Image (spheres, rainbow, N blue to C red):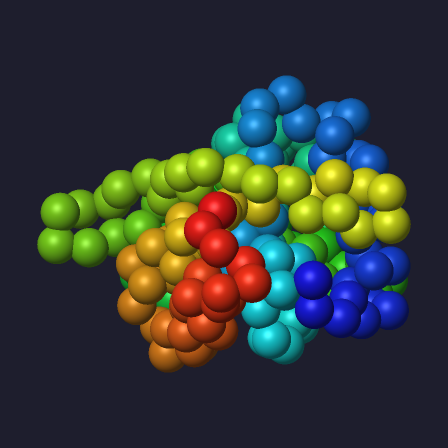
Length: 164
């Protein structure tokens, strides 16, 4: 695993227990935090959590005092979800309930595929496998996601790592 910054560590220490207790459906991290937790050399400025729409609603109630009411997600024409950003000490947390990606075929649910667990100070944090993270990031089609996919692809081809 790449270095977990103090800010990311602090944020995960606060949110992961709540996610296990309050989410009824499967959840996982995606984006830069997920890539870093499997060993990619990427920067992390927020934590993206993919949850069901119902679990997003539960978290919005639980974390209401931390909600950033003014944040608007970028790329609203490309992504839609039951979304909220929360200002945790450490770094922001974006909750995406029922994330969908828009394209030529219309709106399609983002499927995480297989999950693996990344350990952070005794906490098991679910993230998509390296191969599934690459697939997801490439489907997003943004430059920052392509760069993360490249960093993950270097892990997938490492002779010491093997395939997930």
